Length: 379
Image 1 (tube, rainbow, N blue to C red):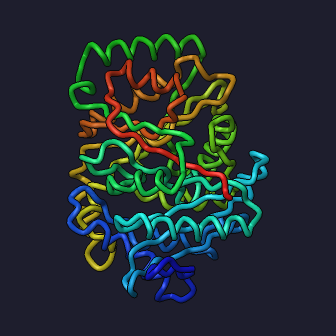
Image 2 (cartoon, one colour; image 1 turned 90 degrees about the horizontal axis):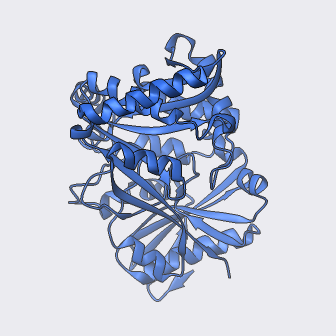
């Protein structure tokens, strides 16, 4: 496939794969807000033998060259579990990076479309890297600050490249920031505490933190809540047992058990929330490499992290809209503050998740970043 001097090649060799993985370093050179991904994690995520996502899905990687110079990349992704759950024929793109050249972007999207069409898909949607359970969406507002852990970041010209190809908005996601002025505001926190106490007593809810000594069973409880609580969310796809284990294996080393909460009624889990220290503060300094010295920097740098990300908050349907999210947020902020964290990002929240958007606004959080997932019918 070619457009004048632009050539699109499928990734076939280990050299191709290395070029695909390392290409972002070319795009973001000199960008003070970019956080280099951990090479180990990217390789693991793309490994079709190690990542259980690929037991039911496929990924095809493409590289764009102009006059033999690498200038772009994209992945075309099928997700058969998504298609079965939503009874549709949607295919996905992800891992998109490109120089600021519309022709390069067009050829990359054409390559992804052709692959998805050959697999019987009628729509292309993304970016997802590679699913909604990973890093998703394109940053369209809030380019002035670096991303927090597991949130995407991209140049401000990417939206134009994508929209000019014909992709249109499918859904927006918001990120809210809770500043130290809010976290230390006695009036705000007092109101949140009163609401939490009322809800907790009325619904007879017990809140507890994660028991790391019983991690395997705790993970099973999380799975129970996850597949019930998120099942009606846009784009949701149930994770398999192996996918859940794969994800937890990646997150376990950075979990702070004091910031992981279960809500229980009669000893049965009805809600779950997870906040993580913003390890991006450390990852930014190790340039993608854990060895030989990155591991030491992680250990030393973790103590200096002052921001957390409330990454997951879910409540099973029969207990939703009762204010339980206020309990999770109150506990997260109180304990987080006591541990030295003075900022919290709540992300991502779907634009039409009105209860969570309202909770963040009422808390005094600022919506400071907007992300977008695009889609287009495949011609």
